[in-house]
Amino acid sequence: MYRLNAITRPRTFLGNNRIAVRVAKISPPLTYKGVRLYSDAHESETFEEFTERYVKFFEGVDDRFELSRGLNNCFAHDLVPAPSVIEASLRAARRVNDFSTAVRVFEGLKQKVENDGQYKQYLEELKPIKEELGILTKEELGL
Image (cartoon, rainbow, N blue to C red; front, top):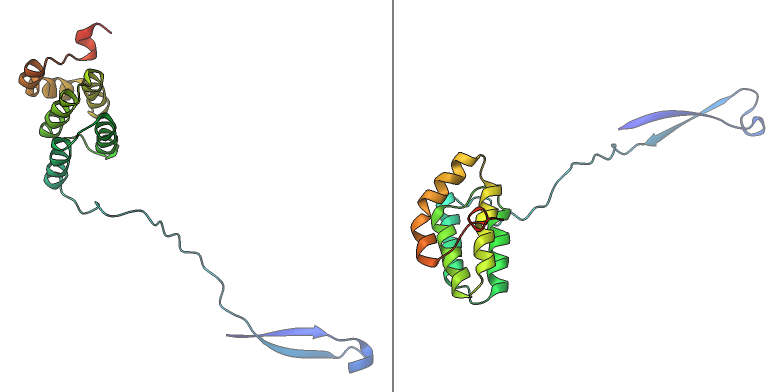
């Protein structure tokens, strides 16, 4: 792409009121395409694969740090974990003897669900595991 630029020169070079014409090559304007480079390692993961991955992860947890890291990663996703994932995390919390984290799993679950009705459904489905492991919710503890 070429553009003509009219440039006036000093009178001594070109005479009175003469205009020199110069042709200059103009590069195309720089455009910025906003590209976000997010990690897409789990972007195409289905809910079933997500559930299976975290159930397997919590079955292999050996210490409190791994449990906390797994819960943080699990709850960071934009979905509510399946009851099987919650069950596996509760079993892992009791295995590493961390009662407070087991109670906090229910707090995190309450924050993730959309309404109290869904939270009550989760509590009903997880009632047998709660009784088996002796885990109470924050509300049941009176806090």
